[in-house]
Image 1 (tube, helix red, strand yellow):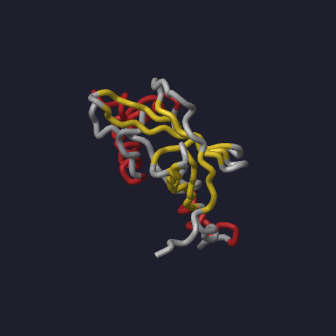
Image 2: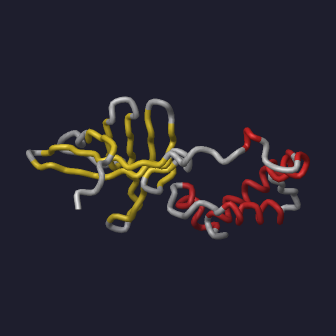
Image 3: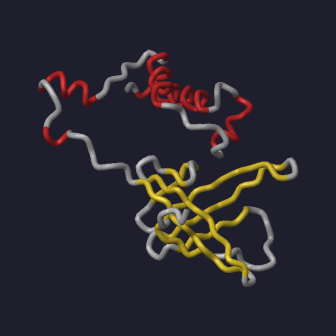
Length: 169
């Protein structure tokens, strides 16, 4: 890719993710819009006049098939966690659906490191944009969540997360 085309392509991809609406770029960056499907991203890059090739296609055409090292990968690393906390004697639970390959938790884009997974969700509350920050400790299973800008009377609960069991019924 030419260096001069990179900013233009990034801008076009950002607009494509926001359905072409300049007024929703801020919300789009906060995750309110869906990510750009791969096929749409390829169309945007091609429309910018750049070539899009799949390295695997090039490899297959030059070698006449898939090499042994390029055989289909292991199954996706997706799992569900059941998180439990007790607040004022009341048991509270939440389920987190983690997809390490897609880099998402419950469908929200996440930042994944060896020690923790963090992500944000935003929603409308009383006509205002509200952002909740979430942190899942990968070492001990602690999960915490809080809404930014809110003063809590007590610290938000810490949930203990473990792999979700099979459904009970």
